[in-house]
Length: 364
Image (cartoon, rainbow, N blue to C red; front, side, top):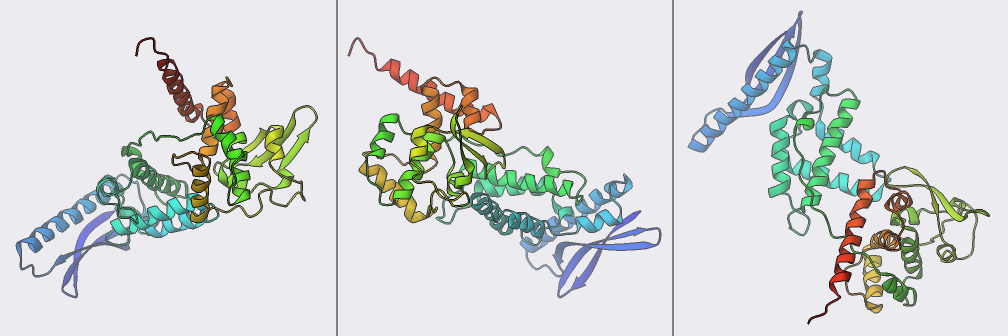
């Protein structure tokens, strides 16, 4: 196998490409790099030098890969496919999952913003990945022109890693270049939750959207996410004389099959039973207007903190732990795959205990 770095002039630019030759067969790989044929400024000459070094670096890398038998002609064709188009396909597969689709689609937008051209798999290496990390940390912004939070940076980079891992599974690349790259550290976020007294206040406070109140209180009593409450149908709610009411459902986020016991009070929130395929929370929608109404309802109940719907799940977890339920059981009730995730709530309870004992003062 012979790999030769060649140049071809077109429209005033000198384009780099690799010429592969093996046993009478030839393949061409354009690198998407070009020189200005007649540089006039210092900047143009410097850019030409940098581009030439990059082209030579790719050539050297390919030479080693083919000499070591890592790639053949068929693999090279796969490497020349578009990483961005592949990522678009992964985004489309997540279309049925609102939150997940939105996150993946946002990464796609940033990927296109960062890339100066249609990036091929052959271009994804340590340098490219470190460059994308740097972009997320220092340059990427939200629609309101604010920089991304550390947790968003972490999430977005992890999706690039996941896409490359999937590409290995799909046989497009042999090794995942992201495995040797450290991720972006996430920050531990503050998890807002309500006290039992605050939940009781909400129960006696009118909400402009009754189904929103019904669903939020149900989340506080069961720990269910909005997505699972929204898709809940009557056929998933079952009863056993031995153990009472329970829900048998598939988590939308994790795809895990769950059996969740619920209290009589939680069941009574559901209203009159309908046909098994009917939704329990009819008309429940995620929208900016409903988020606003949720905040308005909180304020009417005297709760002035920023509470989102997901705080209902946090509330359930903290109330369980506060009332002495062991962390393993709480983890199972929440449907967590790892106890580590549930331990975050244990830290909250520890802080509550510390705050409580510090309120006892003999000397003011």
